[in-house]
Length: 282
Image (cartoon, rainbow, N blue to C red; front, side, top):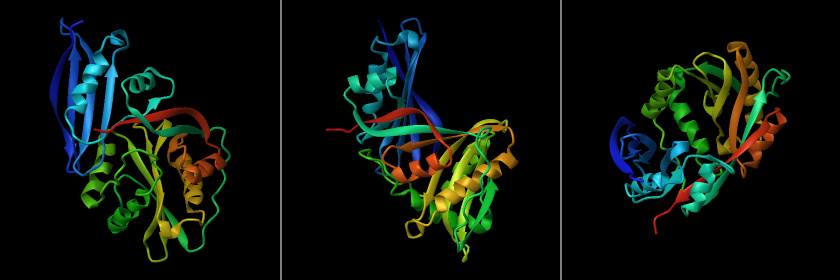
């Protein structure tokens, strides 16, 4: 079967990354699959997405797209999460990519979850906001993102993402441009510094399942129950702010036992598992 791979220019991007794209088509011009590669400006791994139409699989289309993407960067490449046991899982293993991270996906059904206020942690107070970070909290929120620098990533070639005020605004705007709502709950010290935060994205229609983006507690504030307090209070706040939301979704590395315990204690239940594969140049 004839397969033609055409490289495209993707105008989207940010100061911290650029994205390349490829389209596979048959001899009759019919699209067969796509590949997208997001290359960071630092030394981190590139992110890869490869999609082949089900009717075109097992004909070499995915391999051609994968080869084109891997040839475009000299650094390590991480795949998007593929569901365990899926065609994507089998493809990555067959192409010799290395399994580096296991993720468990969980869901909290809000219609069944009891409303339980979190246990306050002395010396801190919580604040909630939607969308843009309050101006007086921008700098401390940037610093708080370093709480994610040491999150468990097992064997993945993970490099902590640099954060500054411009990148914070870029991420917030990207969510808003999709019509979605970025909801943040943060724990503040008595000095007004953000010690911990948790983020949740609600769909544009304000309903369905909302997706957790990240939860982080700065090292010097860990072991006090901040993560559970924030997440418990966020559940009640989301219920009142977005009453049409039916559930909350989270994905957590299997090795992140602390966060998995917090989510399980709040009623999150497993739905499926996904895997990350990596290509590392010889």
